[in-house]
Length: 79
Image (cartoon, rainbow, N blue to C red; front, side, top):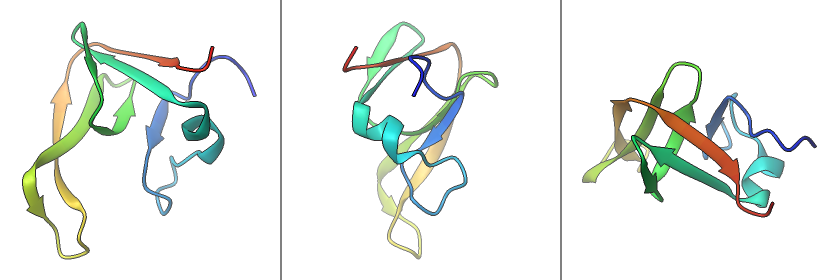
């Protein structure tokens, strides 16, 4: 595995952007200069993150997500 985090990553196993090995190493996300710990999905090249919108859930029991656009920085926490 490389020391570069994936360009796009999701925490949901049924997503095509899910990567267990990357998540097991630990991912740090900084959005607009502030470190975020509640990110469910991100994309560096497109410049967005998805975070939970309060306590609302969809019909599958997952939280409803808001897409926030801005500068995204990602790193591995175990390095």
